[in-house]
Length: 361
Image (cartoon, rainbow, N blue to C red; front, side, top):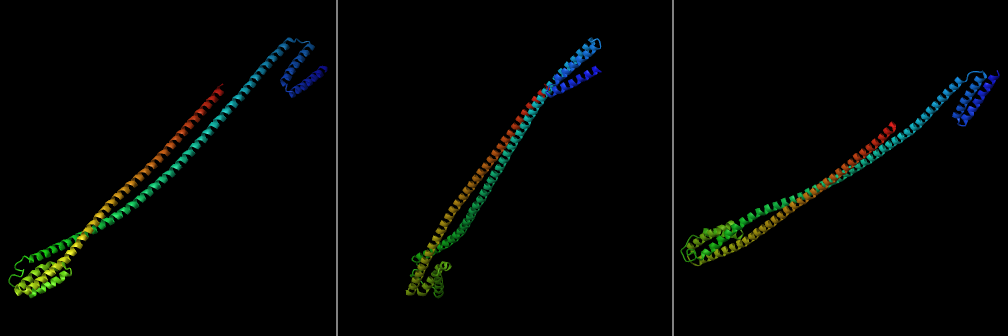
């Protein structure tokens, strides 16, 4: 009974000691102390009972070896846990780098896409501006060309009218010229015609005088047809006067009248001829001026067309150059995106290779 009490007391003491060491963070020492105390108690009990202690000592030796192996295993496990924690931390850090690389690559790609969108929008704005300028240039060119076309058509119409007037004026002038020539010729022939000059025999008078005076009145009034018939009527009158008056005073009076009428009619139609010739010259000058104006208008129209063509072609060239510039900028940004993506992939691949190496270590 005494031994049991002592054993219980020792167990209580060990328990108190173990708790105290655990509180102080010296649990391992407490366990070693407890084991050693237990082994000493067992040896003491065996001696007290008079038992052989060699087997018990060997058993205690084995327990010590087992405890040592357990401590070594625990130390290795602790080191492994430490290394595993460091490896996981390294891997987690690298994963964070990969996430950061992806985020940075995404931001860069978005920025490049934003630049591309801005370039396209700016390019579209410039293209529409050039399109508006080209359209306006075409409209203005059409307005100018239509203006020249209207002036040219008007000038051509004026030339056509003037040419028609010229033909009519030339016809009238030609007729008047022939009439004046006829009147002059007949007047000149009276002085040379021995049958009508006042030295020959007679003829019939009344009808010839009436016809002559009727024609002379009309001719003096500007009737070209009457003037054209006047020489023949004068000839018939003089022939009739010759018959009627022979070479006396009556014939001389008729001859004087005929000569006076012919001279006046000739003067009148010469004056008309001069006016008609002036009209012809004026129309010819008007036509020449109109033709020169027409040539100038056509040259100006051609020049305006050439200028408009050059302007439109220049705007088209600038428009195409702007389009090419936008395309080149877009291509450059696309290459930048591809390069950025490639670099990000390479960085990520390198980081993942590091993770594999860490895991394999």
